Every structure is written in structure tokens, then in C-alpha cells.
Image 1 (cartoon, rainbow, N blue to C red):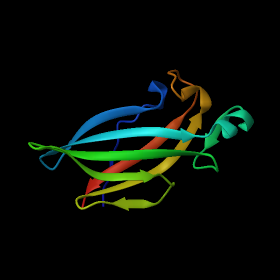
Image 2: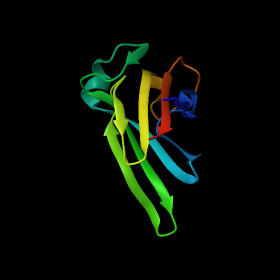
Image 3: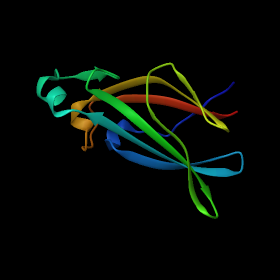
Image 4: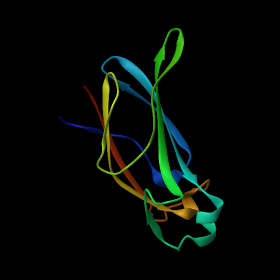
Length: 119
């Protein structure tokens, strides 16, 4: 299976959203970080390899239809775990986040690499 890389730009900060056309359908992707206050108080400086206790990424995918948005996935992401919906397969290889990219933009070395393919 060949995955198409998702157009995630961590320098744009989190949360972020984008639309993607696949197989004649259009999907909306929303990605955000779920981070507890306790984690932020104790988190080291630099890049964080997610998921960690108290910090992880969440992906929501909706299919656009004439009747409205149809939710097809909402998951906490774990590296190298294949997520399958009725028509999509998603896989995230890298999830490194600098805390400055939480609600903030800038090139701080954050890297989020994920791909999608039709099933």
C-alpha cells in the first residue's frame, strides 16, 4: 500500500486543519495536541516524542457529503499504528512536538509525518 503524505506543517502550530481530495471524495482533517497542565509544568525543553503520559495528538477526519460532514475517525494517535476507517488507512510515523508549537507558529523543529491511502 502506498501512502500519500498528509500536508501537515508543524511550523503552523497546533491545532491545524486541512482538506484533502482522495478517490473522488473530499475529507476534512483536524489535528490537535491534548496536553495536561501538569505535563506542561514538568515538560522538558526541546522536542517531545509523542505520545507521552499527559501529552498526545488527536486526529479527526470527516468526509464531506451533500448532506453535511460525516465523521469517519477520531483517535488518539500512536506512532506506527495503522488506523482504518471504512475507506481510509492512516499511519503516523513521526510525532515530535516542541511545546512552542502549541497554539503558536514557528520553525522549532517539530515534525509530524503521517500518510493516508484509500482502502
